[in-house]
Image (cartoon, rainbow, N blue to C red; front, top):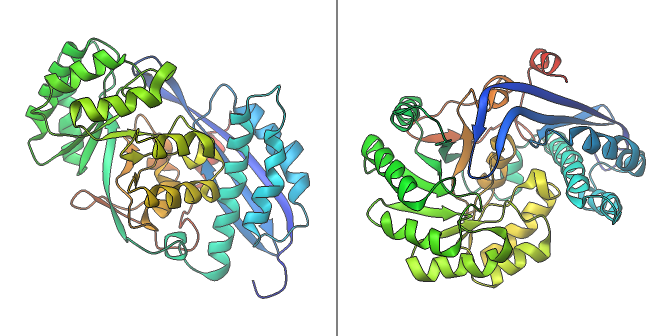
Length: 370
């Protein structure tokens, strides 16, 4: 790609859906399938490709927004003008009778593929283009979903250790603070003191319950408390949890607008922002928020999506942990990425290929179509 414009001539979208081995239950939600969307942008012989999101029931609506509304706005435009492309896509969010989150997910799919194309055009991984802060990232596994099996916590934790993870994000908030405190103590006893433990209530508790849990587990060395309180007053309560317990608080995945994240950061509600690029408009928007967070001394995480998050977190100096699931909870990360890196001493290598550095297994895509 030289000085001449690289005109976008085609955008492809392929929805994927893979049934999971069981229902995975958190505080007030459950997952039955691993769903995602593969997006390809073609321009002057180059192809940008990425997969984004975990939307299941509304997957078809996101795909339709890409094909019917976004693609016509970008065809013929210069693929290198990613910021301009983002602005052209934004009107898809203007329909006040439709959930704006669907349009933001659609924008994220195309925005990610555009950035992948740019990285491939210059032959560089995106983390290097975005700052080049890290070649490896500490990686945490997301788990601790509720189970009726008596030794589920211990058996799952032993698998995390065997796979070489640095730490975990452990699910709480689906039962009483006392019961979850006991589950956490069993976890800590299994993984030992050096293992990083964060906890995630997924907005499951009142302020009083969240504070009670924090005080019951004061000796468990919790790195941060994610989304401890219900959505009805969460910004104020997040700040109160910070002040009343001394624990670092993480939130941001449930925010999809600049205004919402700005209020979390400027209002002193969080220590760590885990905005999800695939839910909020793509890497272009995530990087804007990362710059704002740096000004306030707030560190950045990323909600799940390691295939996207590795390059984003690797590009900034105030990033935290990469997150992923066990193979049965996210079979796509473990099978769709043909060149997936190896976890070594609790760290995952930021892919060094151009763009997102992903080589997707087309046979897995063919099997996973809904």
